[in-house]
Amino acid sequence: MQVIATIAELRTRLVDVNAIAFVPTMGNLHEGHLNLMRTAREHGSCVVTSIFVNPLQFGPSEDFDKYPRTLESDCAKLQGLADVVFVPSINEMYPVQQTVFIEPPPIANELCGASRPGHFRGMATVVLKLLNIVQPQVALFGKKDYQQLHIIRSMVAQLNLPTRIVGGETVRAVDGLALSSRNQYLSVPERGEAIFLYQTLQGMRRALLQGERDIERLQQQAVEALSARGWAVDYVAVRNRSDLQAASPVQGGLVPRELVVLAAARLGNTRLLDNIEVSLVD
Ligand code: PAF
Image (cartoon, rainbow, N blue to C red; front, side, top):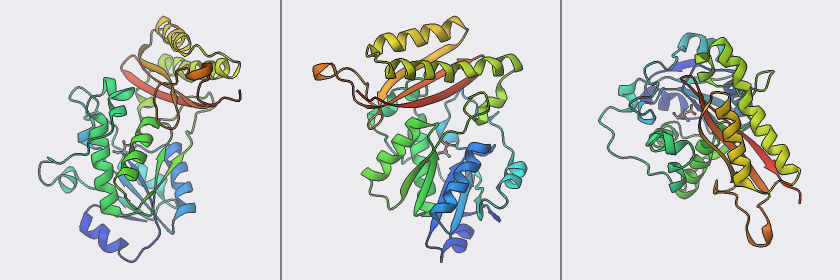
C-alpha cells in the first residue's frame, strides 16, 4: 500500500491502471468505510482511497477544526484493503482560492441542506475534483449519507462523467446505531440514547408496511417522540427513493412504492444521521 500526498505523484502511480475503484473519505475510518473498500475490490484491480477533510463542505460554526484526524490508525486499518491512499494537503487540493463550484440540484437545499447551507455545494465540488484527479472507473459512497449519494449520482449523470457510482449499505453497531465518525463525540449516556433514532425509523417503516399512509402524521409523531426524549430534530422525512421528493399521496391515494425514511437530529452537540429504505407492497 502506497501513501501519496501529491496529485502529480498519484497520476504517475495510476497512469497505466485501467480498473480503478475509488473510495473518497474524510478519514477516521470505521467498519462502514472498510466495507466499502472490500466492495471496491470487486469493482477494480486497484483500490484507491482518499483521506481529506474538506473545508469547503463545513459551515463556519461546524466541526471542521475538531473533526477527528487519525491518519496513522487509518493507514493501519487500510493495510490489505487499499492499494493507494491519497492524502492531499489543503494546499494541494486548493492551491488557489476556489472560485468555481458545483451548483448542486435544488434538493440540496432540503433535508440536511436546510440546516447546513452550502454543505452539498462544497461536497459536490470536492468530489468532482477528486474524480478528476483519480479518474476511477467506479467510485463508492455509503448509503448512510443518502442525500449525498443522490446528489453525487445526479452530478455524475448530468455532467456525463465516465465513472460508475456504487452505493454501499450502512454498517451498524450491534444495537443498530449506524457507524459514523461523529459517534465518538457522544458521551456514554448519549451513546445509549443514540439507538433511538434508528428505532424511530424502524417504527415508521413498520407503520408504512402495515398500511399507514398519512405521511405527515407519521413524520410529526416521530419528531414529537424524539423531541420528548431531548433530541433536537432537524428533520424526519419520508421521501421517494428515486428523486428524494416528498412521498405524498398521489392520484387514487397511492403512495410511490420505493421510499426512504430519512432523519437528522442532534443529541447534545452531536448531529446524527440515519435512513431506512421501505418498499411498499400494496
Ligand atoms: O462522505 C464523506 O466522507 C465526504 O462528504 C466526501 C464524500 C469524502 C467528500 O468530502
